[in-house]
Image 1 (cartoon, rainbow, N blue to C red):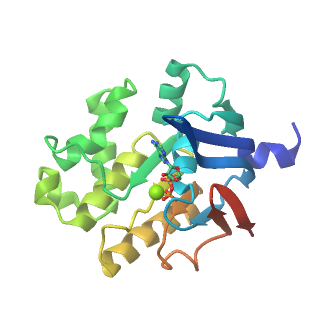
Image 2 (spheres, rainbow, N blue to C red; image 1 turned 180 degrees about the horizontal axis):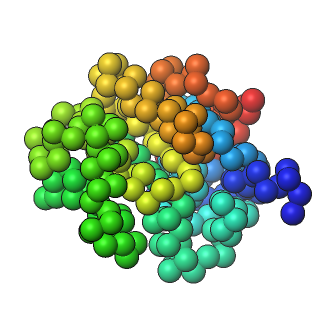
Image 3 (cartoon, protein in one colour; image 1 turned 30 degrees about the horizontal axis):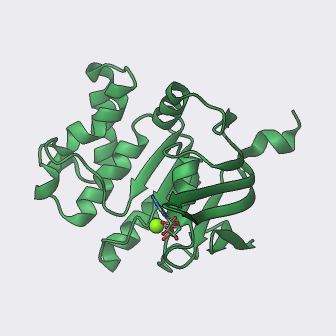
Length: 231
Ligand SMILES: Nc1ncnc2c1ncn2[C@@H]1O[C@H](COP(=O)(O)OP(=O)(O)O)[C@@H](O)[C@H]1O
Ligand SMILES: [Mg+2]
């Protein structure tokens, strides 16, 4: 393997996801060719319905392509079994969503620990790590609060800790500031940038916000499921 290809962490060729709705076919994304090197911070822009969430779901192994090839961190996601895909989701990627997606009956600490426990790690090794992440995110005084008792900014920081608990190489954030005020939006974007810069994670952020424009190393535009710009 050449140096060039070993640095490539995400590689797509003709990547396509269509949805069948009755007799008609809806295009999620269509024929996307993409190469992203490890350590990039990619900001993904595009109007609502342009395919951002579809693309991120495929990269996260939450969904499967209907066409094309997709390699993420040397995992062939198009041909992976369900078990391989589940392992991939737990070990390789961390996802952050607009609506936080925390489990309402678990407190902040438990939400953060859960992906590690599901991956077979013990609570004894997971708990200190979760505490350390929550300390770094400055929410260590909210450990035993339920999501409903947290502010939006605190919920999203908890979700970021959860995304990091299994040490993923890639962080995928889908409109992570969509439900936050501008101050908390800035905090969340700064945290994602810090993960990229200091911790050397590859980060992809789909966002309407201009908050991430400055920090991007790659700017990608989507329209009608196709890439319109990549620089
Ligand atoms: N589960 C689904 N079933 C049918 N169509 C879908 C589904 N998910 C997304 N789509 C369609 O795929 C296109 C891209 O959607 P999406 O990826 O959610 O865009 P974005 O995140 O940029 O708003 C839209 O036309 C949307 O309606
Ligand atoms: Mg979306």
